[in-house]
Length: 405
Image 1 (spheres, rainbow, N blue to C red):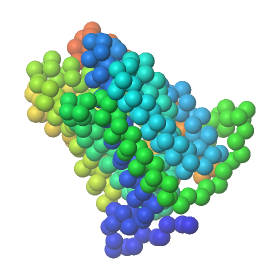
Image 2 (cartoon, helix red, strand yellow):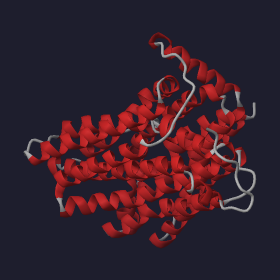
Image 3 (cartoon, rainbow, N blue to C red):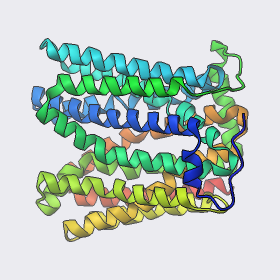
């Protein structure tokens, strides 16, 4: 069933929230994303307490990104062939089961680092399907006239979970411990599973032929490279995840060394960009008229990188936080249009596969984490973040030039 056409005098957000299918998918995404950030913080804190090694913490956290790099494109091809609703529910069931296993191991005193690493891989594999399943279903539920507003509203919720999730994880870890934190996460995953179960979903499917998966991915890559907007999405996604978002990996060191910041001040610094993205995402969701396009996507991405460079060189923490909050406008444009452009431009039969290719580009982020970490040790966090941001602007410019060929 096609969504109703937008009403001329009605707020886009009110229309979206009146759609039961959209609300279920949106709420399920907010719940699972919140618990993902809770798990990441709790597992990182436990890993550090267990080993005293920052490298061990990075391994546990990076385990969630590895499946995106290695399996993102294949996940998109699978989502073209299998029922996306069932794939989404299977992922929620798997993460709920994984959280219960970790809770049991913690309660019995047997929890070890490799358990967290394996659970991170499982969570990362489920996360790999996010764009090709739930995010695509959100856009389809909204209808073609409201794609950007729907994705922007969903992205705004994601920005909220990036602020609230780590805070909740810290509170859980300090007050109720690892076991209860993972029990809570499992219960929330089950609730999200129940919400998705009530979604009415139909889709046209390709026949799943295992030996053709690689050929299907190659075909999607050819389609993406033949279309300027899709070339731009893939190129800028790589630039932002390698050169832009990698700054979060050394943010604690940046705050401590550059500003002698306390843990609370570092937390505020970390929340600045998601807060700006939340406000900007709401503005995009409420926007009426034709959806923004490639220009907004490129300018928003480049603008964030420029502001990130300025924040790295800021003389004081308040100014750095303010600049990062302004940079959130750019990340909101990036996140909203990254999916929106694919949904508006890609052939319908290849959308999940191209979203899978986008996931693979997101999965290149850990390469940037390794580089920015090495640079921070060599030249300091300020210069490392600024240098990566400048390189990111150059990479965005190259992506724009490539998309215009």
